[in-house]
Length: 627
Image (cartoon, rainbow, N blue to C red; front, side):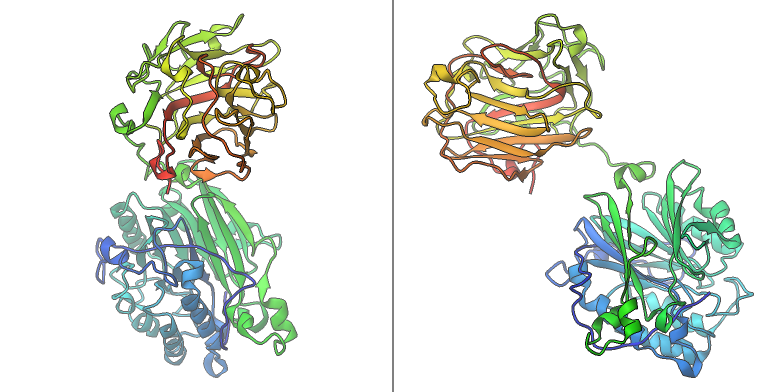
């Protein structure tokens, strides 16, 4: 099936503004055209106004059937030129990595139409990399990619893309091509297949994938899925062939894009590896002005693990609102469920089968104990008397060595009437943690249960006041789901009553002088009674997530305290003066917090490495550095 468009002056798109990023590269089997290097791909500037290949947020623009804009003497290239102008001017703000056309560039594939379209592409050429493939209206529809010379091939064949840093190569017939982008700090392969890929064409495509076995693949073609009126997409006859012969057996293909049919729609298919393949049909030729150069922006966010999709016409957007026609105003943006939506993809998990992220190598203790290290505890063989087996109990009396050499060893101890399973060893750990191990605490209320790691009487950590500042770091993971009552469970603390330190400002003189806890809503609470002030400045975080590792850091510069979660400063850090910690010579403890010098419950979850410094650290100096 088919599409259409026109042009006008473009303004910056404030209504639909996004912020994203991406880059380029190449290689080939039996190919036509040069192969670009990763270095060439990364050469694009990342200065303001330019595409940033390292940003975890980037966009891929998708342009479906434009044929009604190039229809003999009814042609109007203005909308398409405006779309291209928009992509060029907004490339930096939207961090547009690439643009892909889904075929049916023209209505009849005539020399006149093809040349007019090719001229329109000059607006984007050399400014934003792109791919184009042939639809059934660009060539004789009864032929496949072995059809030989055509006006389309002369205008949009390999020679057009030869100078693009993203261009990897083309099939010998010239109708199939691929590009390699560098975006989000990694490489991606865009495979553009002809309207009818022959057996030889599919063999070529398989060769490209085989030559780039670690790259996620976005497959673009003209005819793959069609959608019903509810927006549910289904494989077409040709799509079934592509699915069976190529897509389902190549786990790298995670997203397919095609035009040809309307209405737009989408579906999720399961490949032979049991993984999702998102198949989307995009076409607006049935809309006002043949779609008016309507584009989709697929905005990848590798931090949020989501692709946000929006659909709009830059040509209508650029028009003076006072002069914009009623139909143009109605069509400026499409917001239905098949045109504006989000797709959740855990990229690391989805790509693990062909591009696993290698875990960081464990770091020796000596590498993470800079000047000012007071104590450092970890739960691998370096720090623990015996690690045992995953899920095996850590018995009472087990010593956790203070690897700083300062004599702050901890000893495992269960709370009264607690079973062996309340403290076990685990190989689980935060990916940025120096040691590949943790302890699993299974504390709780009713009945009170838990375990602690307690410093010996006389350990230096018990009476240090940290008057010049300090940093306390650890890694934790909360179970998913959180089962039972764990309100006000402690992560670490110093024993003793703040009332015994002469403090009068707290809600109770029975709470300890320093503790890191979780509220019933899973808000992190850091409460400290400073050595130099009669005060109890308390920091509060947002609700902590369950089921994933987090890095926690408490940093005091000798005047005020700031708490960080995953390197990000939380909102509720008090401005009260806070100098030192009013320790009482009583033990430092990991795994619980006292009240009235009694432990009512222990921590519930995993705790990894713990480090205490006698000076404030910047996030770049944390156990897992944050920029």
